[in-house]
Image (tube, rainbow, N blue to C red; front, side, top):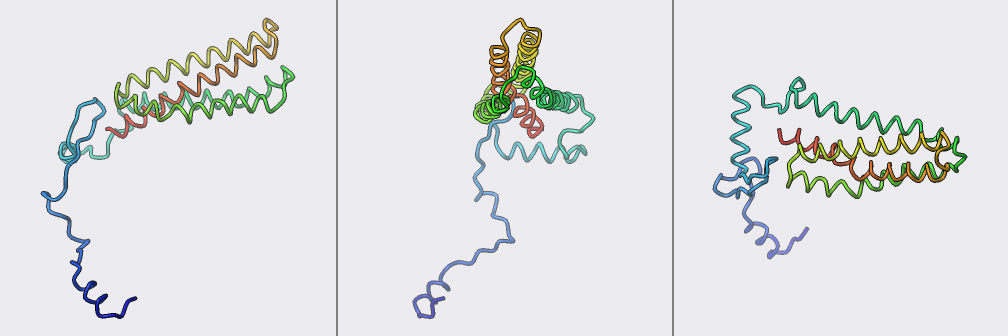
Length: 195
């Protein structure tokens, strides 16, 4: 605290802010935003959409019974179930191949690393291409990675490939999952947030 006269004058000379009162509408700039469809729209357009949704009675966003929500939920559930299924099976496959546990853990680590690296890319791409396209790309990558993993694991367990080669292909499939699997959940969450 300053008890000098100059400090008191400066403190009293400052205008007081009334935090309870909102600023006048003309004082708030309305930045342009990109909608889910790629069009530029103003915040006032969003506010008008929210107000009209409130008048219709669906201001809560996407309803859990809507077909779009059910499809997005199914996408997220399938991706999570596939990943969790691999987490329970991969250690047993690694033991069957007589591989070190660190190699098995490395297959999961590379997947998580690629997921982390690729997520911002898919978020930007979903803004540019649209949510549905990126969801489809992510689902395609998920199907390709799971198919590749299954083929490589089967080839190794049946003896068609050497265990180390089969495990290398399984790690490549997990890398594909990390790169492309991150697209669908990111775009799905953005799709729901847009609604």
